Structure formats: C-alpha cells, structure tokens
Length: 244
Ligand code: NDP
View 1: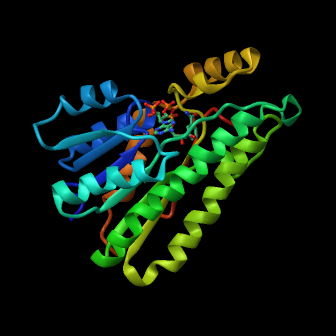
View 2: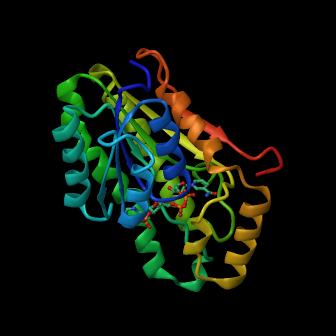
C-alpha cells in the first residue's frame, strides 16, 4: 500500500503546510483525519472531497486528551492508523533578552509537547499493528540557530532527538519515521511573531522567497509513497535562493 487508502492523521491541518498536505494526500486517495483549532477551516478542506474520505475534529495539541481523541477518531472510523503527521507548530521568534517567556512556553507546549502527545496517541496502535509511520515537521531551524531563533530552534532541535530516538526504538515494530525540514515557506507562520519589525521582515521574506506549501506537501507525499522497507528519515528542503 502506498498513499491510496492509507489512514493518515494530520495536526495543524487548517492552513499552510498541513492544509496543502491534506489536499495532496486526499487527491491521491488517502483517508484523512484532520486536526487544528480552527474547525471552520478544516470543514472547508473536508468538503472539497467525497463524503467520508476526509474527517476532521477540533484539536488543541497542547491538550493530550484532545490529541488522543483525534487519533481515536481515525482508529474508530477507519480501523487503523497508518501515518501520523505531527505538523502543528508556531514560531513567535524574538531575542532571549526580550524575555517573552510566555511565548517560549507556548513554543515548547505546541512544537515539542504537542508532538510527544501525538506519538503517545499512536504508538500503542502502531505497535499492535506492527506497522506505522510517524512524520513531524521539523525545520532548517532544527539544524542551524540564528540570533532571535534560540527557543524556536531549540524546539526543532528537540524534534531531531525525539524522532531519531523513536526510529531506533521502533525498528522491530516496522515503524518508519520522517522529519520534514523546510527553510522559508509562504504560510501564515509569521503571524505568531509579536515583535513588529521581526514580523515584517519574516513576512516579506516568506512571501517573496519562500517555498509554496504545496512544495513541502510533495515531500511528505514522497516519504509516504515508498515501499514499506524504505524509510525516508529526513527531507531537508530550502528555496534555491536561501543561503542558511
Ligand atoms: P501555519 O501558521 O500556516 O500553520 C500552523 C498550523 O498549526 C495551523 O494549522 C494551526 O492551526 C496549527 N496549530 C497551531 N497551534 C496549534 C494548537 N495548539 N493545536 C493545534 N493546532 C495548532 O504555518 P506553517 O504551515 O508554516 O507551519 C506548519 C509547521 O511547519 C510548523 O511546525 C512550523 O514550525 C513548520 N515550519 C514552517 C516553516 C515556514 O517557513 N513556514 C519553515 C520550517 C518549518 P490552528 O491555528 O487552526 O489551531
């Protein structure tokens, strides 16, 4: 089985990379369960496809039970979970001296703990199936830190450790892991930045130079659409013009 008929759960599916991935995978015949906080956006995506193919549920990834319930929906409706795509994230970047401690905590809650809650929800199911695939949106920021990205990059470096630990531990249960690590992508991610100058700079860069969300979605589809013995552990992709 490649993409067609796979049961795939996506968090952060209401915009940007998550939405584009949902649309690419649904066109390829996957059965999808989409989660995010903006339910109206999820509904608008689901209604583009035949009834019953794309389900959705309002989900907050900072709430373990909310993530567990999203995964349960997939298991109950479709009988299994082939892929979890942990994609929800936010990027309110700032220098540490700005002391935006609440934003640091929010990034840790969504970008790290949200991913861990996803893993916790699917792991028992995938171990029992003796098959599964966990994908997480990491970033070039999981490899390189700049002034202003210390905490955001810290969350993405953490994903490198968590995902590689998962990979090593679950070889025996045939669970594949993939990190999708984009550079700049033209999405709504800049909107979480509260420093006006930084926000304007990142918005301009993402709009003028960023990849399209569909470019990243194609990388996700590539990782899923492999023979079962092939694990694409990371895809690192940048706009051609991005140096670092
Ligand atoms: P968007 O802002 O367009 O998408 C972010 C998604 O995360 C939305 O669907 C949002 O949904 C969801 N989300 C945020 N907080 C929560 C929450 N508490 N619970 C559930 N869902 C949540 O940006 P992108 O598409 O760019 O971001 C997707 C991922 O890509 C992130 O992990 C980001 O770090 C990563 N990334 C992005 C890059 C870029 O340049 N854009 C580069 C590298 C990585 P809602 O608000 O409806 O809950």
